Structure formats: C-alpha cells, structure tokens
Image (cartoon, rainbow, N blue to C red; front, side):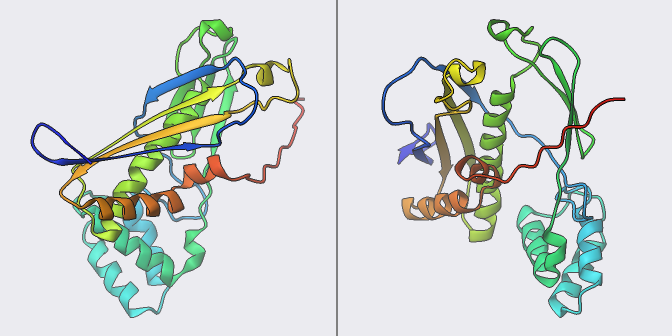
Length: 251
C-alpha cells in the first residue's frame, strides 16, 4: 500500500502470467501504457455500449415476465441513447436483463482486416470503428501504427481497467484511479520458423495494476480477485480458445 501526494491510498498488484521455464532465449520486449478501446457485439441484439444498451436491454426485459426486469426497463426507458445513468445503475440493470433472459447474454464480436501495405493492415470492427496495424521497421514495416501484439497487450490492459471499474461498481468498492501497465516477451524465432519448438506468441506477460482510493487493502484484494476471475481478455490469455479457420479462395 502506497500513498500519493494527496494522501490517498494506492494499492499495487503485480503478477506474472505464463512464465517460461528452462533455457533463456533472445526475446523482444514490448511495453506500453494501455488506453481504452471500444468493441460492440454484432449478433444477437444485446450491445454492451452506453449508446445502445437502453434499446437492447429493453428488448430483453419486455420479453420477460420477471417483475424486477420490468421495473428496470421502466427505469431505463426515459433515457434511450443517453449517458446520464451511473455505471452502477447500468451494470445492475444489465445483470437484471441477462438474468431475466440468458439468451441475450450471447454476444458475437467481429473484426475484418485487409492488408494494404507490406505489413500495414486496415481493420474495421463490428461496431464501426476503424484503425490501422503495422510492424516496426525492424520487422519489415513502416511503423505506421502499433503492431498486433501491442494491440493484444492494449486489449488486455484496457479490459482489465474496465473490469476493475465494473466490478468495483458491483462490489461497492470506491475507486479514484485505475492504471494498468503491461509488458510481454516474445522469442521471434517462433514467428520466423527458425525453431519449431519455440512458441510464436508471448512466453511471459506481466501486469501491474495501480489502484487508488479510500478502501482497505482487503477490499482491493477482493476486487482484484474478482477481476482476475471475470476479465474476458485475461481469460483469452490464460486459456486455450477453440479457433475455426476457413480458407476462402478469391475468384
């Protein structure tokens, strides 16, 4: 536990994931300060966005006979598309909606990528946002944007920050600040096929979370445990995910 210049508590968590054991290999270390990103599901109609959540939750609640669900829909109905509701209210109402109709919890996210340069890729995601991905000059690119593994770390860090905020609202934990720093090590021999025994992805990822606020150490540890258990992108890093690849030939 630390204190900032205003006397507020700062609780720091540092935990390594997927640490490689055995012989040390040359690695490229990637470090960044994460920033938030936005994604929204395409199908079904449940959209986790403050701009659209009022419409989509309403569909779930209107189809439910749950009294609490109907009350939640009335509370939401007055401000479709707005941002006046507190995060705690949005979280609790979303939980009510999903509990009333679990089918609405199945969300699909989409990203489409197109190679537009030697290593530059134009990406458009299902919510309509677009961004560019590139490699540094050392890897054949023009360094026009962050590279894919930096985006992966940024996705993890931003998802951690958001999950801390959401679960702080759920648990009633006061948070004044959340900062997440992440770095990861990659052995590039895996990417270039120099040694098939070396994995192509990260062999070590380190997460440093800094929280500040008036709560006790025990409360922030409780929050951290909840985030570790429920952060979607951390789950992607920790656990294998079934991936189906289809090769479509251009005509």
